[in-house]
Length: 391
Image (cartoon, rainbow, N blue to C red):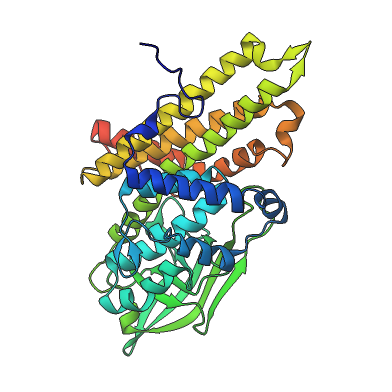
């Protein structure tokens, strides 16, 4: 029997393990992303802009916003289906995937998992369609890896809460209709659902970014923002709730970066097959083939990690340390792929006509947000030693 050689774009045939529904989602998102988004992304990236309201409606019509949540207009798709969607979006740009995962895995997940029934009914159906955009206010100028050091404070005033503080690096903050804001209280850290039209709430655009430029980033300023008692998440205190949301977002990242890595590899492979030097394609040189082999190994190994973690999540066996493993390993692999692919394109590697340098710059941000590489290394270190080394 003659066996077919491996598919260069899916060397280990990983997608053969997808269900029919998951393959359909893959195809739908890939077709939309490459056809409707990819032609515009270089211009959005160069301009430091994203047509958020327009994209939200399109993502909503595709069922991508909060797609892994159940009820309230959400699709209730499998964990792997959501991961595959993130992969296909990030194959176009990390900013596009960030837009979807902040909406679904941070803002919507927080409301879905920790909000009151009133919160869920009021916000989730409209967020699922893209009519309403959300953001997630946890990180502060002086509290990133250590969220317990946040200074934003919520005090009681009669039956109301009054919030004061600043949040930083908030994706979608300038276009959000509702913000999930975390604040210190006398009872510990609590979460609040804050309409962005509330007096005292201000979102300032973060400019001069050199990475994740096709994404809208904000500083949130809360100057005595008054919300009613029912704005608070009812039954949770401490960091358990916001960290659970971050874990959900990190899951999307560990799948998403496989798409970024694949895009860099495919661009380098196509270039190597068509770019001629010394009378032959550079793909014919041993050094280039060694680089391509390294890229294939990294892309497929990261894909294996993502799929395995996805299946663990569906089985209810996904400990947060495993998400740390996936984010650390897969972002590192994707960065290695992007950097090597950049060298293969030579001077063309720095041009926006090719996706590689854009992905490489984006991945520097992805390495840092939702937990830095160092924090995930410490999470894994604690898991294998039993000794926490965070302080």
